[in-house]
Amino acid sequence: MKKNKSLIVLILIFVFLAGLSDGIAAAKPIRLTVFYPSIGTIKNLQALREKGFIEIPQLQVVGVYHTKELTNYEEAIKYARANNLNWFSFHPVSAELSEQDIFHQNACTPEFVEIINNSDGIIFFGGPDIPPSTFKEKTNLLTVIEDPYRHYFELSAIFHFLGGYQDPNFKPLLNSKPELPILGICLGAQSLNVGTGGTLIQDIWSEVYGLNQLEDILTLDPECWHNNPYRKLRPDLNISSYYFHRLNLLPGAFFVQVLGFSEKDHPWILSSHHQALDKLGQGFKVVALSSDGKIIEAIHHTKFVNVLGIQFHPESYRLWDENLKIGLKPDDKPDSYWNILKNNPPSLKFHQKIWQWFARMMEKNSHL
Image (tube, rainbow, N blue to C red; front, side, top):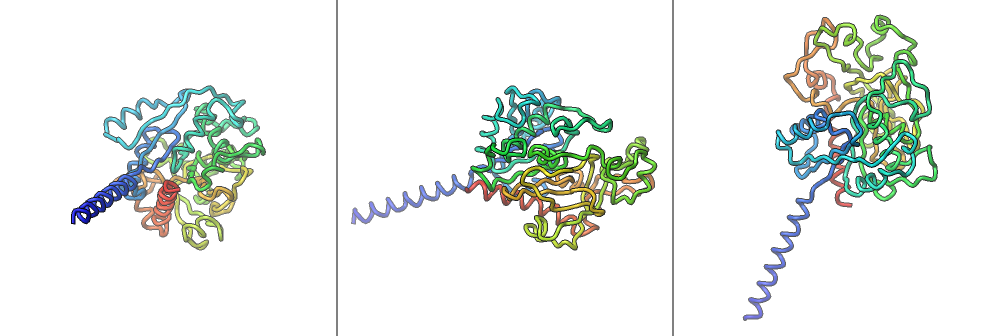
């Protein structure tokens, strides 16, 4: 009888420990690394979580940046503390870096190795123009260089993660985690391209459409506006610097094959850029174009299948604020971005599915 009782006790202990182990496993954090951890970046992630687009209760986000970047990240750190965002932390990098050693092993290489080893997902966010010298071109008068070290740091990270034409013998770090999801948004998409050896169109309106005056740009079909010309013409009005236009989703490519849309779908997206992808970087293919087919709107990596670059803004917290009313043209009745997406299906579903895919891939990667 005593032996039976002892056996029952041992079984109960085993069950308890197994349950405890399961609980610990279930509570394992899912780790997202973001470059450019500004206040805007944090607000975007807050909104995506609050709206349920990124449904990961155990999400932990690390914002990585180089100490020579010009953004005042102290303000972002204070914002995170003031709002008790214990799921967001910061990691400054001070290792030496210059434009000459971006596309080689350098003093930041150990940091990039750690990022890959400790991430279940990575996002590169929007921002200013990339210095054309990084893709071996002279600088157009319309190119505005604001923060060189941000670009050096992010381009070098991308080269380390994915490899590139700059050194065909370089072994990309994603070889060890080939299913790691990496998302590049607007500048982030351009950085994915340049970081892997691609180039950029430095000004869409002048180089693609041959136009140099804003008044002439107004005569174009607004589907060709990748930022809002009225913002410069009428800065006194509450007009968005962003503009909406539709996408052409390429048949058999990422948005059709992976997210389940049809090439007959033309979702509206929020756009604000004056530069665009030109020659593609190593490993990338085009998966979406502008309505007129002249601008690359999304690229997908052929080897690392969870690496996606998008030239639009599905992350902006402004998209999810139903009370934010803003006009796109001087005579427009102000409306919310949310209503524009909702009233032009499948635009809202398209945005949701991008984030659902990314969250699902992070969860999957965390168990590999």
